[in-house]
Length: 296
Image 1 (cartoon, rainbow, N blue to C red):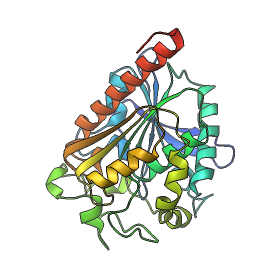
Image 2: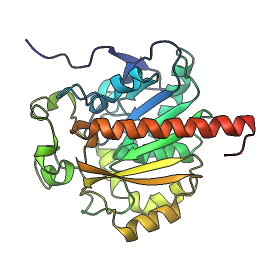
Image 3: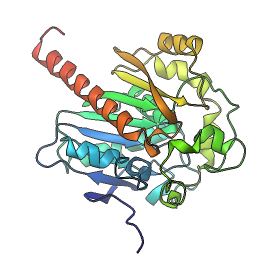
């Protein structure tokens, strides 16, 4: 018997992005949601990254729904349903516009709760920051990013290496394989996808574009670096420079023990997801206090 591609309670929907439609995975809270968590996957992955099937504890979608939030994991432009129409993908600015259109339409069909909170991984983190810098959505309360910094620790490739091999693949993308459930790599077919060429080409320019993007972010941000993160510099000097560039009203830098770059597919996934959702709760408290005029 083959395994289902998604966890119980998770279903696939389609979003109108003002052009090619985007596919997404949706897990709804029972009753009115506290908030809507929008999950953005990294390069060479799909929305299924946030619904790992190698172990029941991995899924952000089921965990978020169980804690009263709706979780929407979006296949970014060039992935999933839009891959045929956008075989070369889109640069970050266009992806941000498409995402804004998609969430405007989504908000007309589904309740958002107290706001939108973005959980993003790797290249999805670049999109989250770019979208926030563009104004993105009035209901955005915060951003939680893993696996994304501003200074590469390895030469950024013109094309990201294959997720499970090739130049630097296992070391950079995964770290020690003991960090992942045994079935992770046999179930990879539903998680990995080719990285579109336009997206891969833009990856090399991130160090130059980051300062301008970072200066325009006006929502709380939490950045998590895995213990075995190898794509990005996260030493004291690099983190100090990063925090000096990001204009977020609140900025947290966290470390995730016993994790590699792909945190949400490893044994550390549940711990990371719980911390991300705790940050969401803090962002909601701040937003409520601001609306009510209460001191924090």
